[in-house]
Amino acid sequence: SQQGEEDPQALSIQEGENATMNCSYKTSINNLQWYRQNSGRGLVHLILIRSNEREKHSGRLRVTLDTSKKSSSLLITASRAADTASYFCATGSILTGGGNKLTFGTGTQLKVEL
Amino acid sequence: KAGVTQTPRYLIKTRGQQVTLSCSPISGHRSVSWYQQTPGQGLQFLFEYFSETQRNKGNFPGRFSGRQFSNSRSEMNVSTLELGDSALYLCASSYPGGSYNEQFFGPGTRLTVL
Image (tube, rainbow over all chains, first blue to last red; front, side, top):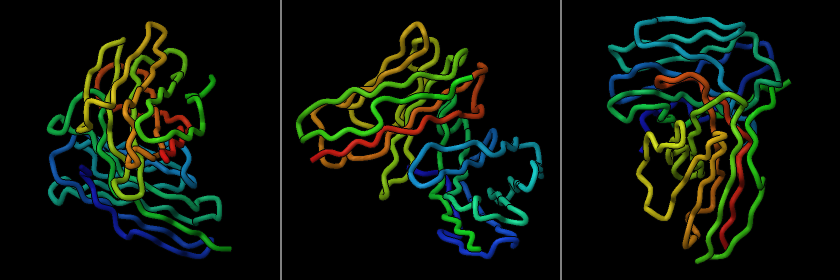
């Protein structure tokens, strides 16, 4: 079963615009991670935010986490055509399994047009 | 460092057959996790191996099994294949001990069951 729901399911923007994706999850978490997947290939780790952090930046990426609302958002600023991909949030929670088990959201398909 | 490799990349089988997929983690990584990705169910956790021991298991039938060797390479096996097993199977490795770490994914094995 999936822990997270992502919204929107699909997003189409122009190059240079910002893209915001949201993720909601169901249980208390240890951390939340965002991954990118290009066209049915392997996933690439983007950023990890711990449950005691509220905001994190990495290059053009900004992630926020609101544990009271069980939600996170990923902002990609100044988007490029190369950012076209599916984006997934993934949570690690002792309540859904230990070790490195991640529970993935449903994903947002981002299309950046020239 | 070389990334996570998976073999074969593509596989076509018929119902009732069995299949073995292989994953070689990044050198030094001792944790290997397997995920199944389908359009309907999304990304689902199969199991994780750490130091040759299964550390976590998802909600899949016993037809899905795995193992890890002393060099951290991992295999997963699916017996008595069903049409619904058609999916992209992703392997991910992680370096440190502990839990919920950044995962490094391989390119996946695309399995088609006819």
